[in-house]
Length: 99
Image 1 (cartoon, rainbow, N blue to C red):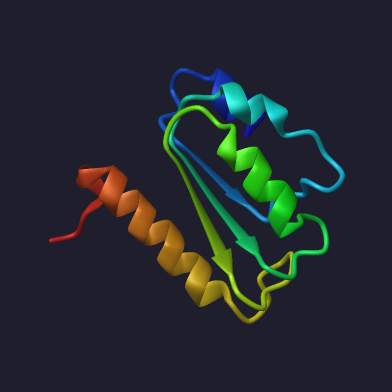
Image 2 (cartoon, rainbow, N blue to C red):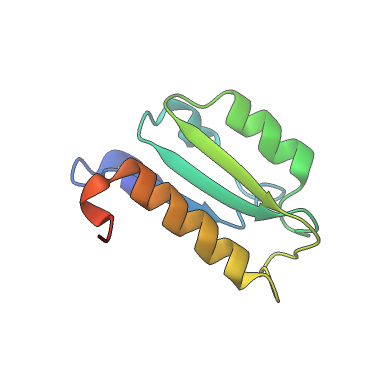
């Protein structure tokens, strides 16, 4: 995500299972690109509270989606991950919409 923020060719960022408990993601606070973050509510590497505090300080449009009862790898919940990403991409980038 750090490289995507800095690269002018990148139009938006998707983060899945951010390990905010052990890594510094504060650079996202200054990244104004649109962002989708999908996180499991039982993610052992990214607590709900820590992620919500980070997102509250981010520049630009950020959508945070929690997948309930999902771990770090969203095991058994990949259909919900797929739906979240597909919805965000097609809402944001009209050229991706299928007729």
